[in-house]
Image 1 (cartoon, rainbow, N blue to C red):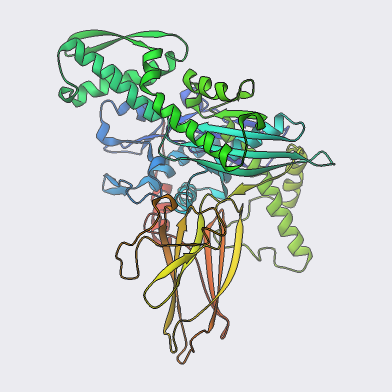
Image 2: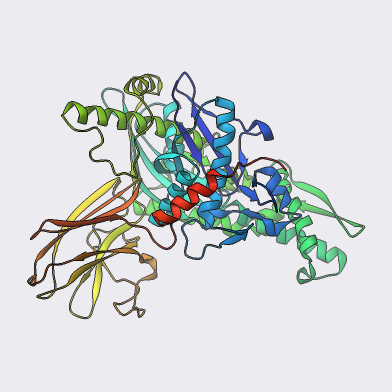
Length: 568
């Protein structure tokens, strides 16, 4: 049976899943490490292919300068670090591709067939650049990326395919290793017994996660060590820091099961005994817990709901295993909290979404062929069809859970072009909005500003404006000369890129230019058409934080030449 796959590309751990013969999602075991997860860490050997996984993570204590971790927090970001190993520059996109390639290789070794068609998940709060960068990482690793789906949406799909019932409102609290999302869903069942999972609202912070709790626990243990040895935290050497950090993850896990934990820190021939209490750890991280609960309260307020209006709250992400998290959400949603497969639910849901997406695309192709089309019309060259025949897709359609009819995702950002208000100032005219269905598209007509205008430069912006009236027009952070101008920081206005259209000589003022925006799994597609001449220019918006096609080609060739391993 041809297969599709779902991948949870995590900050600290990643997971790959597929569907079994009964159409239910199963995680593919990482047999080499006897685990169902893969540590999202890469060690670059001085000579040889990269090592990915637990061995790489452990090597960070010995050679931290050759190990890269937590790149999910940096992918698609303007401040992302680029590190050089063996003469090659590795940015977060390339590092992520190595983690994905490692999963591809061990999944293929077990299944005996190519792992090609995948859905990769990302935090709901990721913007266009982060999502584009994630997809690029998948392509570099050798995948055909069918979609980038929000992690909470995947988790909700996994839950709803197993727990089927009446209409309900579901909230997903997703606290991973490096990111946090809170998403509200409507789960509606129609007269035929089919269900629709619809995103109502989401929020979060893509730089808040379990590693922040780790940092607090490190500070706690380090301070105790310093107190016992009459020293200051500023005196801690890199070697001692690595020794203490080695204790942090295990201690955090043990404090989820018992009230106190004793540990020995051996350094330079001396052993220091330290006792760590769960209560002290909780007190030192209470503000982090409250940060997440503030987002929960905001989502409820945004939708005029109370906690009583939520039927189920799903805890997703490994960091939700901490008792302090369960206590906080249980106190607000008593009797409604479910902690099921927190490490694996996202990948399982992504596998289900991949199956649904695959069937839909093959059926769409069949319909176009029956209508006399070429079978590929309407698909961007970057949006490859799944490697499934109609017979394979029909079989897949029979075995996947039939309870869910549709799964919707929503845009996490608003998008629009900059338009001139007068000769000296311009604003963003949002065409797509936070909360619109994904994929989503919109068209608007504009006019040239002056007679004999030589060209139209369509500058594209992203922001978080939600209100289609109040936030229809927002101010960019820079004016046309590059000078800073006032922008409400809450709107997070960011320039993504631009499209240029040359105009014929003699073009009169007010000549109509039609602008089309479409945001989907392949990114933000922008098209401008001169309605006077029917000339069209179009592009998929990229930025300096993602790769050009030339850079992609080089990256694909380089990564294909490597073979990742789980050990040295």
